[in-house]
Amino acid sequence: MAASILAIVIGAELFTNAVEWAGHLLGLGTGATGSLLAALGTSLPETIVPIVAIIVGKPQSTAIATGAVLGSSFMLLGLGVGITGIVVTLRHHKSPSAPNPSPGLKIPASQGRRDLGVFLAAFSVSLLIVPFPFAVHFAWGICLIILYSVYVIATLKGSTPSGKAPEPLHITFHKKPIPHWSLVTLQLVVATAMLIAGSDLFVTQIGRAATGIHINPLLLALVVIPLATEFPETLNSVLWVRSGADSLAFGNVAGSATFQGCILGFIAVSFTPWRLPPVAVISAGLTILTAAYLLFILRNGHSKGIYLLLAALPWTLFVSLEMSLAAIGTSH
Image (cartoon, rainbow, N blue to C red; front, side, top):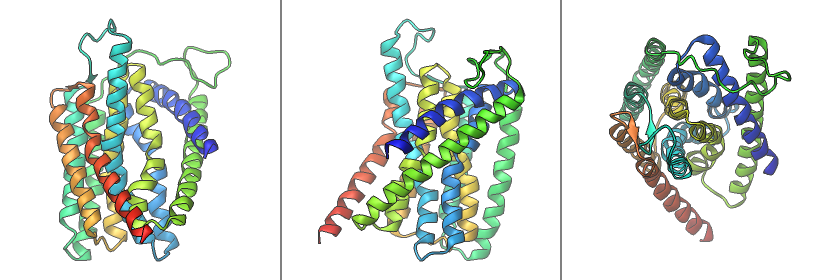
């Protein structure tokens, strides 16, 4: 367990540093770097889980794939944003004389509306089409791919380079001011491999523990797997908030949720029966409420840390209740 966490921590540090340089060399703004580049890289573990589950085709594969799609966004927008809120609050108390006199997270208002708005549209419609036949599911899956493509274009068009160079690339020995693309790519590949390997090992270890206490596969996918697969996004956001890169931090979280709502949503509605039991519907409904709450508090591009922390409340209550019920069921 310790080895997997260490791999994720080191991988996250290498990844955030490499992504900042990739965005800088491409002339992207911090919002686009976080919402697109960082989100794509850190979403690899949770993308692999449902794909592998579907390909393997075991009896619990549908439950794992469906739960991973629904649970990842819920955990990220709930617990992930909540932890970000704690770090935002601690940052202000630690450095009250920082350049930002107003405590809280500050991002471009358009970034929050775009990321959360697209996620809400994708996720909500995916939930509404559950009762419809497969043809409708597949058609909506194609629409999700189109929607994400439009989102990417809009994000790139709204990107304005900051012009400020990140801290030196970690793997450079001579600390050159501008690293070569090959070094940035190498660090990205190494970091991504560490994130995937660490997350996979963590999922395996948690899965064995959950199997030992006989947790339902859907509950495992809704709660336990996202704790591992969303760990990189959460850790990246913590690192970026600590350094004052709020747009990168929020873009990584909300951009990952948007990627999951569209791309993972496409996988779920197109390649699984997409029939949701009550616990999955409740989870999805709470995810929509959490995203809507975040869209409201960030409507002006600013929120205090305590308000971000409150986003973790639905996820925490849901997980506590479901784990308690699972424990009661196991005891009987």
